Length: 319
Ligand SMILES: N[C@@H](CCC(=O)N[C@@H](CS)C(=O)NCC(=O)O)C(=O)O
Image (cartoon, rainbow, N blue to C red; front, side):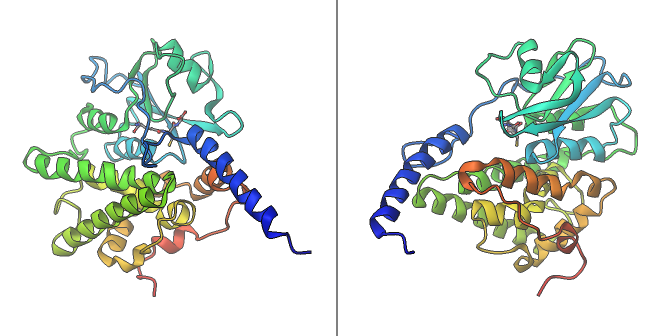
């Protein structure tokens, strides 16, 4: 039996009201409906600690689905820091909306407890990635952009790559700043926009920056700043590798699938082939966490079946 239009109208109005409230919990917005990422804790750029090289002296805590954690994880593995920094993965608790340790870590069951013991205010978000000194439980830094820089300066093997060499610093920083707002946070600004105009602004900025990256790679490459892999590439990868899997279908980032940007498609494939990178890409966990947890964007909680990661990183551009 058809549902009377008045019932549909009432349901739409009621749902929209509920949706706005639920979105308020997911992420704040300004008066125009633009998503504003809340500030985190432990964001100051730290010096390299005196005991940085000590085996297992520090722990890098990541969540597999988090793109901000993924960038720190990538610097850690590209610079081969396994000897001095242990990697610890936390699991999402979708009911409580927080990160949980699989086994108690420094006496804590949740990341929130760890943050509070380290001196964060109770109201502050406990986010990944975070670098912790094992002996004291001190948080060294909890902000991913600063963490990338710190890990790049961390004592490493002589053959570990410098991902921010001095001659390229200005170019790298230019890319990183553009990517941070319009691409890394840009996909969230699309997905968490509260109005059509807010979405339109974020979406236009995102694809304009991707076009710039496409042009830069088309004119040179193989990396964003030329022949050398850098922090700029590391910063772009976690967003682009999630594009068709999560951000396209869930956040409405679907104007151009990546195969229509062939230089970026090839760049993503090259980055994925770097040693260790494939193992940091957990497409099942990404799908489960994003589609299962972001209730206001996807109330059914149904997790889509594809596409598979393998089809996105193969050699041929898809027709
Ligand atoms: N500015 C932070 C953002 C990190 C962030 O938002 N991480 C999310 C996961 S993708 C998180 O841990 N959220 C937990 C929370 O908000 O309580 C950074 O770049 O390090």
